[in-house]
Amino acid sequence: MASTTTTNMTNTFKQEMMCATHNFSAQINVGAATGTTSSNLTALTAANTPGIVVGSGLAGTNVAANCVVAALVSQTAINVYPATTGAPSALLVNGDIFKILMIGSANTGSQTYGQLTQNVGTPGTGTSSTTNVGTDEVGISGSYAAGGQALASNTTPTNSSNVAFTTWSTNPQWTSATLSVIGAIIYNTGTTLTGAGAGSATAQPRQMFSANGITANLGGSAVNRAVSSHDFGGTQAVSNGTMTLTLPTASSSTAILRIA
Amino acid sequence: MQFGLLITDHGKHSDEKFAIATASELIQIAATAEGKQAIDARRLENDIIDVLTGHFAKVSKDEVSGLDSNAAEHMVSRLDPLPHMEGILDKVLTVCKASAFKEWFERGDVKQLMFDKIASWTATAIHMHRDWFSQGYTGHGTDLKQVPEHRVDADYIKTWRYRCDVGGHGAGLPPALVQQYKDGVIGKEQRS
Image (cartoon, each protein chain N blue to C red):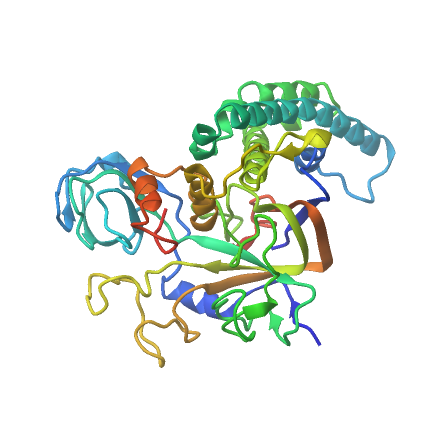
């Protein structure tokens, strides 16, 4: 018996969406700010701040690793954690980083990846379960690495016909690869549940408690939370070639992720 | 929530395959379609494929040329389809407006959707050439060949793989962040 895939949004993802712990926002180019070695960045350009949400990752010159937006102070000022390490510039505010991995056709697991999948855990390692795809992930080949590939780039969710939906701007693709797969899982690598500064109320604005401790999601695990699984309708194989997953048209009836 | 799949064994997707994939999203013909309207639609689809094949051939030529002439600079540049988009939508619209469905292609939302789709597939084509290059291959079609003296530890290869891992392709990485990655200050957990 081998693991199989279905096409579904996971149950834990739906719960977590109601707790605001997934951020699909597109990258926002904020530019420069004042606030050298400070957690309070001011003099932002007001036109660049719409769309920033608490918990968003911050990158740029003199920005500490795993920095997040901790509070929105005004239209031109934000608090961040950890503090910047120098004069901040080239600031980019990001939504979470979502990745996609694929399930191999020759897997030896016994899972049904779908609504009950909670986390992808440590892809490529360990026994498969609802919180770890483990060795059910297709083996690395060519540019396919353990954990798959980051989906580039987030596009801010929109809605029409009473359906909210989102997608990504570039189709995921692997080259020089020999793969045999049955489906894929989209997951959130966002570390805002486990970010630096554990114990600080302002450091982890979207962290939630669970029965398993502070660094856990509703499924009991902190990172690589499963969003959705996608069945390929059978085994799909490529031999030393190029495999591209085609994202469907972003509309209320076809987008890859939709909430009605 | 369904992905489509585009698969090519033993090499890259051809320019025509990209054109066919793009055209199939620009004009969708029901499997059960028949009669004059179906014939007109398939004729238009073929005309679009002809135009887009030339577009993707130009993208391929520019990418391979850029990689072969200055890989270090090309691989860390932004994965940006816009420089390739000038004029292509007008060319596609010209054949569309000469078809029986010209009224449909006067709509602003349809034009925007067409632009977005062509841009997305152009970005996918650019990604393909650079990803193959990161694996040590250059050229295209039957001319696919190994990169002379390819080094997997070259900074621009590591930067490319980092972007694949954390999603920095679309926007590019701030220079300071690229340097931090090269210096080993940040690892796979850092956001792009």
